[in-house]
Length: 235
Image (cartoon, rainbow, N blue to C red; front, side, top):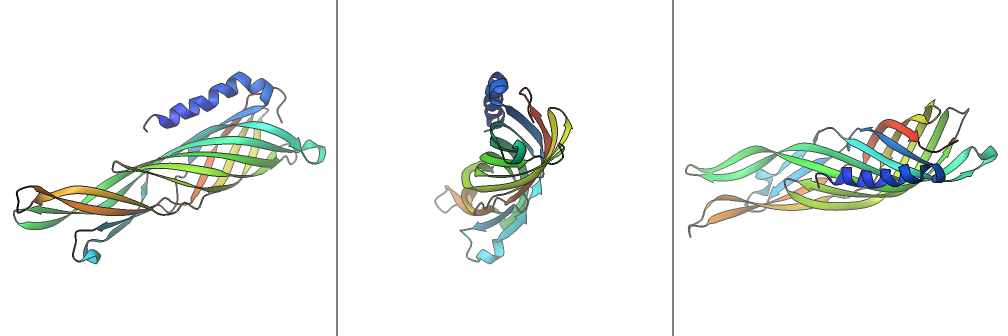
């Protein structure tokens, strides 16, 4: 999973570089705000008093990046000021959570605070509609489907949801535009199960403590970056 975003982005970019003059394509790269609202709840199933060991934590967000490419499908509207694009975006992000572990030693049970790391990879194809205003501003909306692959403490799960985006392009040079967009996707909660050793049992074997994580992936993201046209006479 570590190199998957780069590999997929390369597979997107290469066809655009080869066929950009014919298709009318563009490349996008920039930073994202990560996913607002990520939260992790932890429930050790072994505890006779679940509320005592329940531990919830909002994410400490790490750096997040996004990039992709689009193909200009058609010019539409009055004086051909509007256009339809088919776009594919890739994102890579991460976060850290503090969680509570239940352990055993010679003195009995001990609660330990530890950090659980999360990495996420997103793949979002969408259709965009935009309108050029005064040859400089280009508001746009997009509708698509997002696929998220999440790794939390070595446990991998996926989530799929519809994706809605609204944004603005601002022309800087002929083939370069600043791009800002707000994106939301109603990703549901994800349950993850992890077993960890807690100490020797009566039989001499190591007992396993099962922790149930309920993860809320977060629904909203803000992107800031640049968009480069790689075709001749692009609007």
